[in-house]
Image (cartoon, rainbow, N blue to C red; front, top):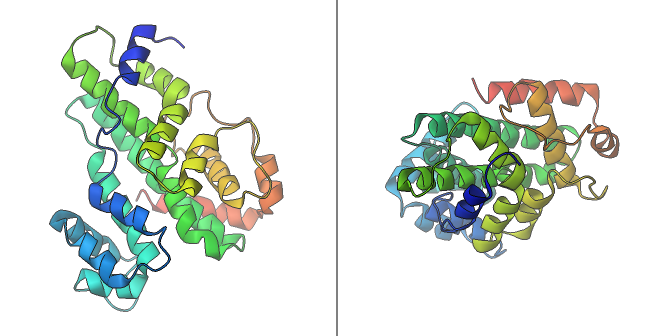
Length: 273
């Protein structure tokens, strides 16, 4: 750890409720835990945030999701795509909006973080389908999107510390990378626990860089493999010291073919086009 103990202390003292989730998207995510959730409930929640509603409609009508017909209202979109897919779009739309800063170096890092997170979301969904786990596709998308949420929190926290000016430190790329490497998993899990995010996703945040993964945890295996491959596809600008040495166990357990890896690369690169 090359950054100071004082900076680490200041980071840990930052409010747990720094803006890393849109309240409406968060409410939708928590609503998924209720199997009796109805379309009208989802529509009502989304319509609380007009800007988010418009962004969801824009994404729902994009070539990736539109299909034969376009949706004119949120209700139309929910009816066509389903509650899980709409929740994924809401979370993606809101996350994209949160990855901005008035500090250039932080803004650049947030931009790259968004590209990486979105590529991993698309990649996890793609891989789940191609290896025969279509039933996990929606969960895989959200798991890929949120696995590095700790990095967004750390960027917001360091932005706050820099603006407050109470301690002196170099807010540069190297410092940010060091902080990511040391703290993003622990802080990510802390955030997920605080906001009562479903365990399936908080477990991904906590274990996507663990030394080992349980062979029956297919979703974690997918995220670990996609996150690792993002480095080779040049879609991870700051992996530093936190990747596993290889993903041979994940490839073996998930029975990933060369064709699936080729499709994964195509889909992940397309997400940034």
